[in-house]
Length: 244
Image (cartoon, rainbow, N blue to C red):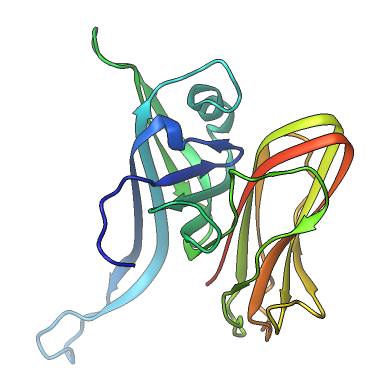
């Protein structure tokens, strides 16, 4: 990806797409530095990496009145842990995405008279921050069982994990239900697909983030698949996945 101007960042917070209410998104990742300097350090500090953490901060224009809007979503998420996905330049399939499980730790609103009503908030990581890709775009409604586009993430070495986030953004129909899963294979056509992660069946807006056990996965192609049931069901959802 070459240099670019921030015009199309995307922010998915559990079951809400906050993109249209955001004009600033910052993503911070850091590792504590623990000093181990001693008399054999030749006059220079020696450091070891300690605990890692990540933080997502956002701000924008305040809206309320629907579960998908920033005020409703922020109040319902405050103090809770769920999936967060940030995309710096669009959220089409295979676009760059950063995902984590995070605690919604703060929510601020209000400004002086005459100003556009603002909001700001912070989410702090409960799992590692993962650099991955979008597996399913939020703008495509699904009404029946299907599979997504295959993406070559690469094999998962032993000791690392496949992470995946699901954001169910809207639901319609009578008794609708969607069960999404992450499949892998060693070929783009998925001749022998293996399910690596299965999300809990969802019938309302919300989200979930999962990860594998840490065992090696030799398959290098991954995709999202889903099973939809109900009468005239329709789901808008986004998924992201990556290896760390």
